[in-house]
Image 1: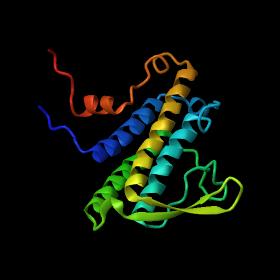
Image 2 (image 1 turned 180 degrees about the vertical axis):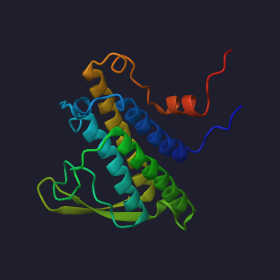
Image 3 (image 1 turned 45 degrees about the horizontal axis):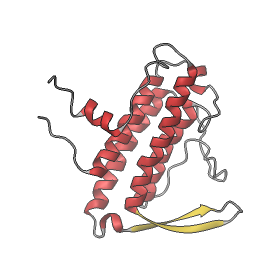
Length: 194
């Protein structure tokens, strides 16, 4: 029997990378127009949703670790004041960025797990109010780590819905299963005939 990951945070972080990578790998078969096709779902396209997932992963890693924020990869809907590079990236370019960002987040999580105070230590973030101005919030690093993983889940569900709406044979009728249980079954616990 293989060794299975049992720590909930490790599972969340590994699943997050796997699920985003799985979607990006499926997007490799799409044309530029299909990857950028507009939908009234999420951020509007597979490109924009997946770029946002990777960009948020990078910036929250910076916040959790207390280091300067890297530039945003795309516009942040609630924060038009934040500069971004706005580049058009291919699935392979996003895969390369994910391959750097996800291990970085796992390393930051490991470092803070071992630090005095660990995940209970806090960070302060200034967040815009709907009516204008900012509010300062205090979050534990544990909350921020959990947020990163949950954030990706919501946007990945939007991506699967967009793929369904593309109505492409071989893709739209063969959508990936991205649940945590699917991650462990596919990466650590392949089925055994009974």
